Image (tube, rainbow over all chains, first blue to last red; front, side):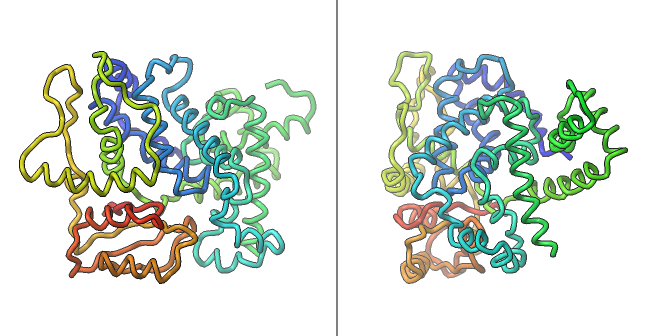
Length: 186
Length: 218
């Protein structure tokens, strides 16, 4: 199972051209990363209103300061790391609205996990409701692992934390999601 | 991977399962997990559960948007500042304008850009010292026919259904079904709508109650 996009594009060549100020290379780079970042930021923050701006700020930083990439990681690890830090910063600014999207469902499912599940199963939305129970960093670990197909070492670099912390976050996230999945089956 | 007891190994393997599934473990770790799965029913069950979860996680997102349109908006936001960095020209601003400003700018700029395109002018400098983006307006980025245009729209939570309906009536569009889990509605422009897809998008984005409006790729 691999969700890694095989774009056939040489990202390193694009980044080299960006260093030289090649705007066309930047446009190609932007389009290469746009959908990946959109999904990652949306899943991590659960705040659609932040997504567009965060993608643009992340990729604008690549355009403005490509020399920040030091070749100590993959380019994708560097870009996702920028996006993750920007997402956390934006979420802390919007803390009072954090996770507002599902607060109604959440308040009910916390009291009774079965309360809204039937309706959400019909909508095939149980996963989104379940993900709302996770912290942003747990959602990021889930998303980067299963959707973006990254190793725990890469995720540790993106999240700027020890590798064991990545494993622990994943473990706790799995347990919470499993509880929802079990409730769904019964 | 240092292990001391069977239970330590079991716990270690359990933690590695997600990366066994996405096939990013080292060869040694992969072999170790594989061996353990042959003997451990608990881990095998966990592995199957995780595989199901992985399939659900990678299901396609229902909030499709266009990178093309997004890049066109970024270029508009940067405007005349998009110049080659190598020449000591005006630097690209380090912070972007606020969303409210951005919405207003998008609406006015897309109109201006369309007019410029009509009269055959290019707003980009032609000197080699400048970056020569191949300028395309939003109206050129997504050649979607109005009569079949589908849009994804996320309204602000505080927006009443009356205001929502009034806005949709203005652009002559209908909601299709309910909002998805992320609050996004699918909107279809009426065949009789006098607006193009991009005009409808610009109008939606200029409304303070609209958080996100994007064309759906078809």
